[in-house]
Length: 211
Image 1 (tube, rainbow, N blue to C red):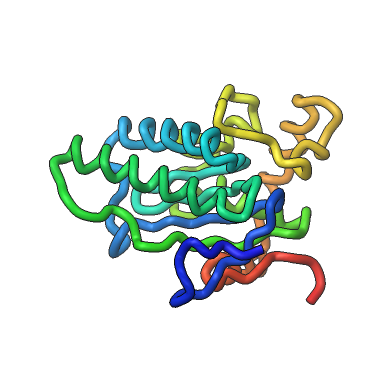
Image 2: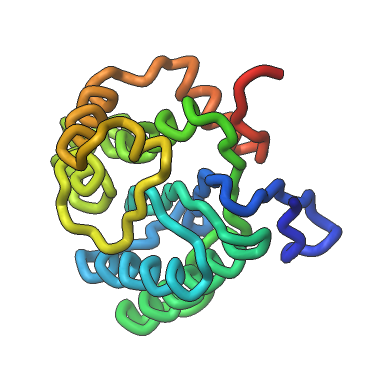
């Protein structure tokens, strides 16, 4: 139940096959990772390729200019590490080639925490897709083109998105699920929940009900 790809000199991440992870990857020194539209498009392409190759299902995402949020479920203990390595390498190669730069693009290590509770799964969906609103660059998540909100809330075709069981349980039909999800997103996340999610992904602490 541990991700050991980073060696024994660093704390091991808790990973459980079939249990979602909230993943955050930031640009080195908080610098930009996306410079123009095609960078976002290529990153999403790399995400899809890696999700299929490395068996890591993506439920929600938000690509910001200098960092990325993902909610993913790995099929095995090492799937997320392989997935992120593939995406980061391919996107760095793309950006360096297109924008004539060299060197690293990302912080050396992504942050992630396991999300056990179904309550927290839906909170992470909302936290991720509301990121542009909190950052003040969109009035509503539907206004931001580089997140999964329009797929999860309005049915926009997005071959990257795989509905988590908690999301699927929101309604008996796709339309009912989307309507229920829109209602959830329209209810602002409590500040305490936002702080809990931020703290968990920063520390690697599991999100679960109870102690």
